[in-house]
Amino acid sequence: MKELIDAHGRKVRKLRLSLTDKCNLRCHYCMPVEATFMSEEKYLAADQYVEVIQELCDYGLEELRLTGGEPLLRKSFNKIIQSLAKLPLQKIGLTTNGILLDKHLEVLRDNRVHHLNVSLDSLDEKIFHKITHGNYLKRILKNIEDAQNMGLQVKINVVAMRGVNDHELFDFVEYSRQTGLEVRFLEIMRIGFAREKQEQQFIEAREMIAHLKTRHELKIITKEIDSTSFNYLLDNNAQIGFIASESQAFCGQCSRWRLSADGIMRACLLKDDGLDIKNTTSLERETIYQSLLGMKPNLRPAEVTHFMNAIGG
Ligand code: SAM
Ligand code: SF4
Image (cartoon, rainbow, N blue to C red; front, side):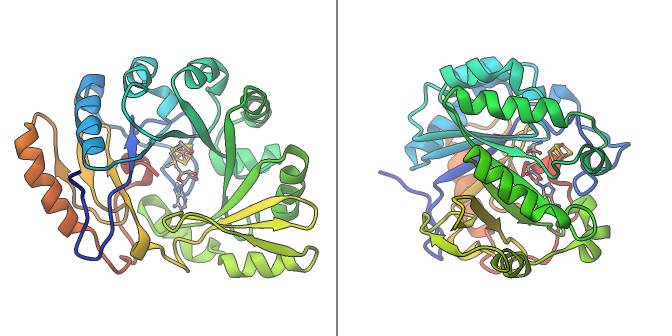
């Protein structure tokens, strides 16, 4: 089989596909309240995503994760996943803020989108609003419960922020214990809109782990080599993970490419440059893929100016 392997031995195995840069929240580390978005006319159509992803499957792509912006806002979301479900992918996931899950659980289940990462930065309504400018906490918690009851695999992503939600660490441990869900704390990254506040709000994973150890015994859980997180089982059975993209970068094992809603393929989240695959032929894309292999940095770039919602987190 043809494979996409770069000079550092990293094989492209996973793709993050952003379906829109739009969102129904305004998380303060992601985008400004007055955000502007790309014209929907620029989006690739369902059959164009399918053509490219089928081709990447022929090159060894195994896993696809749909993201955004808020992917569930994409008007043709159902049509897109119905087409993608037919591809020979081992795993299809979705990263969502969870607000619109109630309208999509069945279509997700029926179209092989079984791995949901739900972003949930606070269990307190006031703090949730302060972070996201939205009042949806109860709805999201209910949607998570319904997704779990439907047999979908749900993980919770929490961006840890000093002085904002860091006092909720043990509340999330208790949430994990009660629900049986894995909760992963993300280090806030120096990307786009977050660059202004990142320094003052940053908490290193190591500090959170030390804090957890004041109350719990932690047992490390083995993960795939190219997993972005490292995880622990606590003595109360809570499952807590960390995505330490700033303090313990995983560039050396990274197996991901990203495709934006308008067809820009990127080899790295932290690189501004990407290559446009819109209206290209398969032959042209072969050259693009080879160029992208050389565009993946081996050492982690310190920061990047583009906004997270535009590329797809
Ligand atoms: N709207 C969906 C959501 O929030 O899950 C999907 C897109 S969002 C950009 C994907 C993930 O990126 C979320 O878990 C979000 O918390 C994370 N994220 C956004 N900006 C970030 C930043 N500056 N540092 C760390 N994580 C960030
Ligand atoms: Fe929207 Fe997700 Fe960005 Fe929050 S992190 S503003 S939910 S895209």
